[in-house]
Image 1: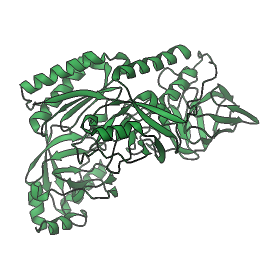
Image 2 (image 1 turned 90 degrees about the horizontal axis):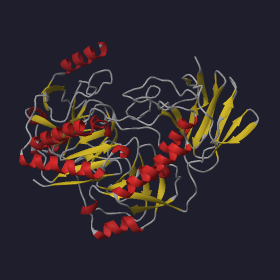
Image 3 (image 1 turned 60 degrees about the vertical axis):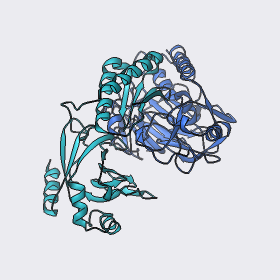
Image 4 (image 1 turned 120 degrees about the horizontal axis):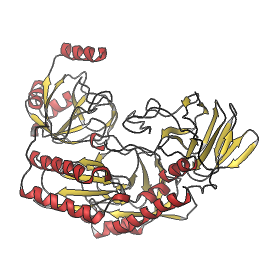
Length: 308
Length: 233
């Protein structure tokens, strides 16, 4: 069997694909790659047409060996890949010999990387996905973060993929990242002052960031809403707890919650937000659902034309 | 009955009724959820019923947002015109509970606060039938209501980092059993040995929205017996 051995497992390393759906009613979050765009680009690059799983890790610092010669690609945050004596920038198709040490190091920008090895991480699916949900201990390898020394099975390498041009890294530095959001949930119940405070100020990304959500800090936003009956959250939901610091809810969010929400950041901008390090300045920009649909179409079109 | 249909991010639509939660409303929401699954089939990737809301998540590339919104508004209007009724799928589940200070760190606190004996609390908590209004928070977690006013108690200001699995707890007029160990701010008054979530069972979650739950006080000996039986499975 072809395997991958994790020599240095890195930070918050999990097995992910694009996530699971249909189980939020019983409290199971969708999980899946935090930067779905980077995940899809890696899958397309290797001809992975069946949602093959990759390794997600944060603040790139990972080393691995494979039991057989194989191809791989690293997507997401820009990283430096060292195979033997040769060092390359991430985003292109790479090849490693059997038992050769491969190092992946952050280049200082972005947060999440994806290591896609040809054939994918071939663990069984759980509720329709290989994605790890560590809090629920579902999916992945025993539902947990990976550790040094873990050995992972690889699927058969596809013979018919065409190597593509190098892939753009997921994050380009921006002074202030615009988070386009669709107002909704309790937004209309907020006072005009509260709504203005949310839209006019620049927030910054805090270190309170993980797969559940990213907390922002700024001048506290008082929603004036004390308690709500628990209702569904959603991807990108801007939740405002009593301390007034918005939290953008992400892949491993609680599926229901009782805090007020101002609306939700569109998926395409969530993928940019997750690649932002603490201190990144962000601002919320309200858009209509119709504008959001156009953005989703454009991003889909980009993937289909650029990478097929 | 009034309602509002609006977006829930770029993938979702949210229907919210502006009225207090009650079982007939939950039945309407469940009927709407089933109708949405039939109507949209694969374009609907997930859906969640809350206390007074139904949220639908779509594949944005196959969604005609305006049409879906109109459909949901029409369905909601129809639901207003004919109140929801229980259907045959809804079940009653009896959960055994050991109410004892050694396994319930807020039991004595609550008794003292309300100037009652522990037996009174057990009696008040276990004599009612509870309705399952919502699920989520954690896999298998089910929001049950409504508890006797004398037991209603606010959440802890600072949630505990770790509430043990099986903890039977109260927050305001809601009660619930923690299916797995998790952070939590509810007041713990007992422990339930029944497994509420098991990936090897079908369905994985024991309790569904619309179910009825009864709590049955058990002795320490019974508690151990249930635990032992589960360990052998």
